[in-house]
Amino acid sequence: MVASFFAGVGGIDLAFEQAGFNIIYANEIDEKAAKTYELNFNLKVDVRDIKDIEPNKLPDFNILVAGFPCQAFSIAGYREGFEDKKGRGNLFFNIINILEHKNVEVVFLENVKNLVSHDKGNTFKIIIRELERLGYYIKYKVLNGMEYGNIPQNRERIYIIAFKNKQAYERFEFPSKIDLTNRLDNVIDYENNVDNKYYYTQDKCSFFGELKNKINKHDTVYQWRRIYVRENQSNVCPTLTANMGMGGHNVPIIYTNSKKYRKLTPKECFNLQGYPEEYKLPKDIADSQLYKQAGNSVVVPVIRRIAENIAQAIQ
Image (tube, rainbow, N blue to C red; front, top):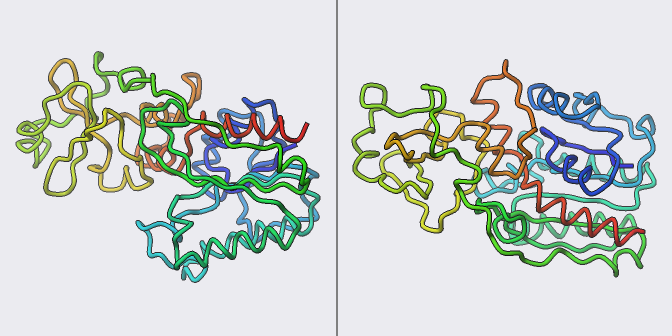
């Protein structure tokens, strides 16, 4: 039985479901993300602030999963960690509070890779120390989606797995690297036309001349970086971010086979996180929110492989 906190649109939950686990509870404060979640899971999301949740009123579960907020630990944020003035860093202690009140065998945590180095390593030491204080044995590793999930996106994240049972801890191993055989054109539609709103044209785009001068390959992904075009050299998509939809020009750009310039669609961004084709996006939510949801999410196949190894370790 799995309980999910900071569930977002359900990437971690989907991966654990694919590995054979049963998700019985999900908490996500963002109501738009919860709407996307509920469209794809037979589960009502608890949209309360985690600080308002009373652990003793939660259903019983033996696995806790959480992609707890990463802004406070990210270079892209303010690097304030537990001192984050918006309280995001402190939300980790709400997870600890739940673990203190519930009999949880396994904890799965996902975060940005910079969590390890934040505040000269002190933030990460606190996280590990708090889990060890509760009797957990811990393994952690930074994995890249293109190396461990066969997904053409350069996305490094740290995964922390904590076990109450020492034998399960000793049996658990992180998955090994696999070849990247999934190409960009498997998840991005370079061939067919999409809605006109995704295209950059001379009359609608102030930097169209730069796009025309620099973008000329059909098998790569580009980014507009305020004053210049950046080409990704490794034939994968650069890391998708939560601020993609904010301001409109952070979404990766492609050069279609019909020689047009367009940004990725929200669905393509979800494809680049390894969501299955049947995963649905609400039609009444703005693209800016869907881009944010995709950027905030996880590489599903990486977590599925970790969850499968967890299942083997605890059997």
